[in-house]
Amino acid sequence: MSIVIDKSGPFTHGPNTVSKTMFTVLAALAPATLYNLWLFGLPAILLFIVTMAACALCEAACVRISGGNPDRALGDGSVLITGWLLALSLPPWAPWWVAVVASVFAVCLAKHAFGGLGQNVFNPAMVGRVVVLVSFPLQMTSFVSPKPLFTPGSPGLSESMTIIFGRGFSLDGISTASPLGFIKTELSKGVPVTQSLSSFPSLGDMMIGFHPGSMGETAVPLILLGGLFLMWRKIISWHIPVSMLATLFLLGTIFSTIDPARHTGGMVQLLSGASFLGAFFIATDYVTSPVSKSGQLAFGFGVGLLTWIIRTYAGYPEGVAFAVLLMNALTPILDQHFRPRVFGRTRKGEPLPVRGDK
Image (tube, rainbow, N blue to C red; front, side):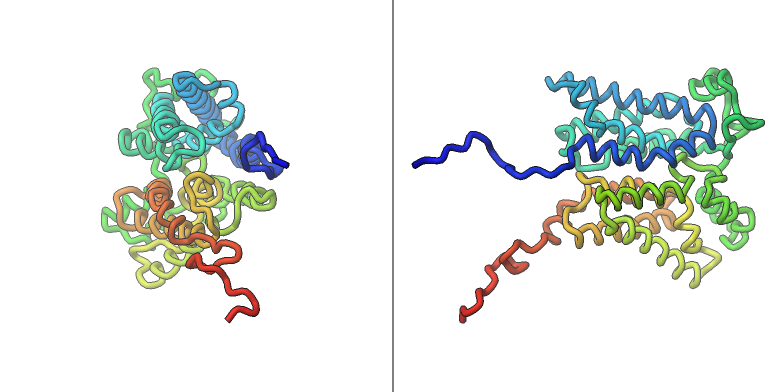
């Protein structure tokens, strides 16, 4: 008797699909995103739409050129996450062309140049952000204070179109530094951190996002809520977020205790910049992070350590994007070193002794 199998493995399938996972992540990001769009008004909404549209067009073009089905590629939701995270990493009132350039590099270079979905080495959204941050530092460091939608001072549609699509409007009169950028600038002038903190937003304002910064740098409670939702749905595990945030907090606390004039404290490190967005939604990317739990702990520790080093000693006040990309490069090494034990074998790959063997 012969048995003929006309299908190849895997023969066992789980309930999750790529599209289910992607749209669950989008649902987790939605509350924080809606809050941030309200916080920064119509210009932020227009920039968000431009970024999402540019990423979708790049995805469709790359898939079409490679002979694939653009409708199927757009339907899995992966490019929506790339565009979403990229928009959250930009200044809320950045010019439209910054979003387009970042989208082209994120989707065409970081994703499809490596083979498309599941093949990229680096996080696409962070590649797009770093490219425009290095290339256009003025536009990428021109932040505005929150101007909530439908409140006095919030730009109308015509003014918002002028801000985003750049018809002669100048940001010089309204731009300001982010909290981390402000401290970095003051330190370069010889002003100690302890004195700069007197002009710093309160921790309460930092928590609810009432300070200048990228869209993803605000609304910490809502980002945390989204991250916990992903853990509850078992989309992500706690290993990377906890190890990254704990490392950042401990380094900030220890060094601010040793030298408070030079270093910011642990809470400032956590509530400033993209710490929470990076910990729950960027560093946990399935494709570019380690597979094993021990590898994920090492990965999160590395992202936290590099973020703190870049914020403290490098020229850029915010370091999450650079730290994630550097650790993405080390992911294959972490996967090799922290391989989970194969069932029935030791960590060295040798068979476990069977009871009764001598």
